[in-house]
Amino acid sequence: MRVLFLQNLLFKLKSTYLFLVGIVLFCFVSNGFAQRGTESPIHFKFFGSKEGIKSDRRIKLVQQDQFGLLWIGCTDGLMKFDGQEFIECKNIDAKINQLLHSNINDLFNDSHGNLWVATQLGTVVYLQVEGKFKLVDFPINAVYTINITEQANGTIWLATMEGIFSVDKNFKANIFFDNAKFHNTIPSVHVNKMNHLFVVTHNKLYEYNDNNLLNTIQFTNDLKAEDNLPTASAFDQMGNLWMGKINGLLYRYSPGEKKVQCFDFKKIGANPSAIVDRIFSNKKDRTWFAINESGIWYFDYEKSEFQSYISPEKTGKKLPSYKLTAFLIDKENNYWFGANNAGLVMTNDNLNLIHALPLAPEYQNTIVSAVCVDYQKRVWVGTDGGGVLLFDEQMRLLQQYNYRDNDPS
Image 1 (cartoon, helix red, strand yellow):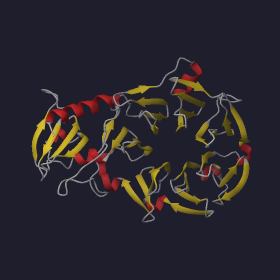
Image 2 (image 1 turned 90 degrees about the vertical axis):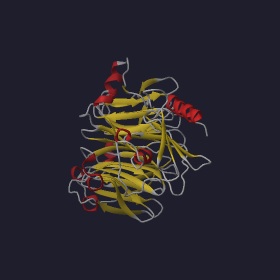
Image 3 (image 1 turned 180 degrees about the vertical axis):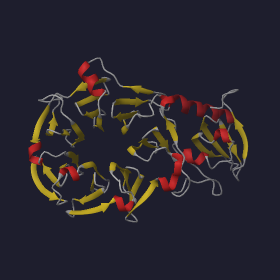
Image 4 (image 1 turned 90 degrees about the horizontal axis):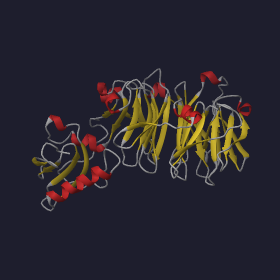
C-alpha cells in the first residue's frame, strides 16, 4: 500500500464527504485496537460559538436528510450543518421566515426526501428538489404543531394543539379530529409497521385503520393532564410504542399483546427531576432516551433492562450540562445531541478510538476517517487533522505523514 495512495484517498474523503467522519469499513489485527466497549471512556467534540452556535442556544432536535445534511431545531429557529459550517435558515417570504425563527417542535423526513418542520406557529416543508420552503395551509392561523408522521400511502399527518390534520398534495391541512375529542390535551401522532395511525394523549392511546377506530387503550388513570403531560413518544424497531411523561414515567405499549408496561425513570436514573425529553430507535436491539439531568440511556432488549450510555456518573465533568434534549444517531454512526450551555455535541467510536492510540497530546481530539491493515500487518490510520499515521503490529507509532508541509490534514 503506497503512502501517496493513502494521502490521495484521505484528501478525497475530506473534499467530498459532508461530515467530520466517514468510516465505511474497519479492519483490525487481533492484537491491535478494537471498538470502544461500553465501559471505556467517552470523548466528545463540541460545536459552539466558535462554529456558529451560541452557547446559550437551546437545541431541541437534530435530524439528517437523504443528502447527509444535519438540520438542527432550536427554541428560536432552524439551522443546517453541511459538515463545514452552520447556516441559519431564512426565507424571503415573511410568514415562512417567521416560522423558521420560532420554536421548532419536530423535524421529519418524508418518503420523497422533503423535510417537514413543525413549529409553534405552524408547519413548513423544505422541498429538496426545488430547494425552497413551502408553507402548509391551515384553515386557521398560527397552529401550534407538535409532531409529524407519514403513512405508507404518502399521507402526512400533523398533531397540533387544535387537533389531528392530514395534508393533501397541495399542502393544505384538513382536520381529521378536533382536539376536543382528546379532551383538549397535547396529542402526538405515529404510524406503526401495519400502517395503523396512533394518537397519543396524556392518558390514552387511540388506534385507527382507514380512519376507523380500532382500539382505545387507557395506560394511566391519571386524568389531570398538567401532572401527566406527554414529553416524547416513538415506535421502536420491534413495533412497541414508547411514551415519556413530564412526571418521569415511561410507558411501553405492545400492540400485538395489547399490553402496557410502566417504568419510573426517577428510580432508574436515581434522579428526582427525570423527564424523558427524546426517544430514538434505529436498531432492533436498542431504543435510546434523552433524560433530563440524567444524560443518554438505552433499553437493552437482550438483557431487558435500561443501561446508561452518557451520564454524570460515567463521564463526569466532560459535559457542562446533562440536560440533553436533542438526540440522533446519523447514517455514519455518529451520536449527536444538544446540551445546555454546550451547543451541539458529537461522539463516535472513531473519536474515542483516537484517544486509545499513542499520540501526542495535540492530536488527542483528532477524528479517524479510515483504517486498514496492509500485508505486513501494519495499521494505517487516516485522520481529519492529524495526517496519515502508520503503526506496527503492536500499535507502536512508526511514522506520521502530512498532506503537505505545515498541514497534517
